[in-house]
Length: 412
Ligand code: ASP
Image 1 (cartoon, rainbow, N blue to C red):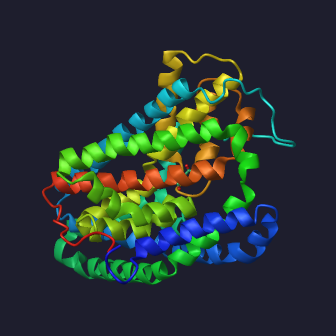
Image 2: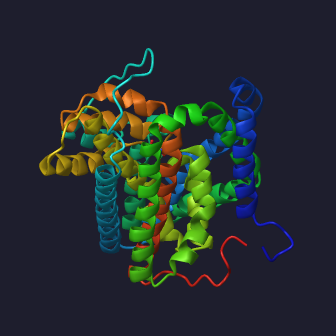
Image 3: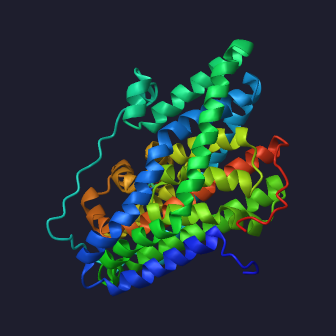
């Protein structure tokens, strides 16, 4: 570090590392960490949750309306969705390859944790899933923080504002101002991030010491390794090829958000920071960041899909089932779809895992084994989820010819 003042990224990193160290000390008495330290982390979580609904609504309305014409909006929309789907499918494939190579389940016989019972997540029909995207009462959608519905309403508002031209201006200005205010609140909240990150980390480490981790270490290694490979292979290449951006610049620029995602395990919760990093450090214009990132935080989950691929193989191996190539392709398809339906909140990917298992007829009980280590896996997969969103915003901005040069060194 050259400057005299520590950058915010460094401060958050220090908070994270200190959190791990202090967490080790509390391993014998996780209750103390839970009672006295966790509330400071919960405060951070609550602060960011506070602004999610108004932020997503206002930024997506502005993002949609500021594109200016509906044809361009369609083009950006299609690019975004295609990027999301392709990268997610690659992520599951990487998960499956690692599951085949590392074989995390071989040698482990099924021993469910005491009292563990896992119920299958209900699989809603495709018609229900699609119909549920449209809120019959948008206010209720906001009250319940149903993000997919809030997104749908915001898209309609944005398109409506675009279509009526002059008359839509006051509403546009209103949402524009609301979005700006939300960004400035984000800056205030981020001042507290190092403490929040520290306080979230301590209880996680205290509760998930080596005792829980070791038996399933291979699963943890496969998921972490997979996430690293996916970032290097997919994100580095796509920002380099489509945007001519050096991967180092990209990862440095999004590092702060990745750390917040790591500790909060929530893509939605990290959204304000992702948006800030993408605009300030990566040069993504507001209109594209405001369109791609809220959408991505809700439907694009590469890390989650990769984790589901690894876990499906792990569970098959525990039961001595050999998944055929056809079944593995089914896993790719169902994990891609499941990750779209996964909410950007902690633990959501685990619930959807049961759906993936069912798609190839694997018993879901074994996912109880995963439950013990899920938080550790959630941290890395959430980081990858939001880094994936950011890479999409860079690629879309670049292919639209709108990526700004960011001369300022990110995060300093
Ligand atoms: N926690 C993840 C996220 O917010 C979702 C998951 O559980 O996989 O992106």
